[in-house]
Image 1 (cartoon, rainbow, N blue to C red):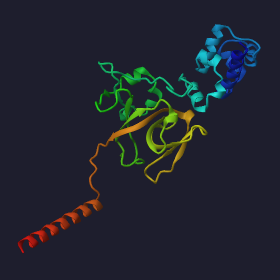
Image 2: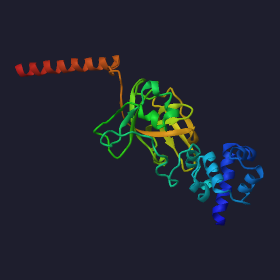
Image 3: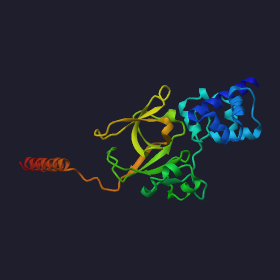
Image 4: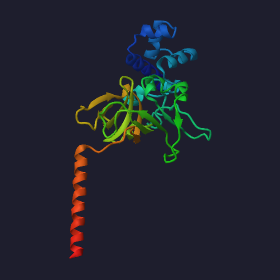
Length: 272
């Protein structure tokens, strides 16, 4: 019992400090006295069940984890997800339950995030009502065991994917499985939907380094506490036909002329 009580007390203090709240502010929110709350954090007394529920709601952490798990040992990435209200398996799999839709055969849809819904995705991504109104479709060549979503792309930072293209990507549950040097859709609280090549060392540093394929854009880092979702690139659709550049057209024309000359030479040789 002592071990459980110590985890609870230290967890309260940890979560309160990360939330940047005073003991007075927390005690008022859960409707207990300041001295009572202080005793919870110091391990002097344990709250009743009703207060435990209020604390669980206030810190967005399940009762089980609040009481039994030493949250200081789970790592920055998992802890930041907990604080956003995403309860997860702390071993690193299934970081949160994804809000999704299914078709009439109970198969996962591929939801399409239209350009006009892009801005609202960072607030609606976990809302079943928001996800339900997104256009949905199925692609037979995608795995039935994985979850996919299609996102609109803005800007010219990731050629050959152009502005206005749509990228279909696979949901990443365990961020430790992110492949360095591979393109991903990263959904962040501050920047919304971004499409970048990703590098990381999450075992040592709780950030992702996001890089563009266009050398005019500098790499930058994103703290995992600012990340809402990660999706691995699968394929993309450009709206515009990628016409040959003038340089390539000239090369093609030259090659055709060479082929004509070779044909003429062959004809002359055959005639002789």
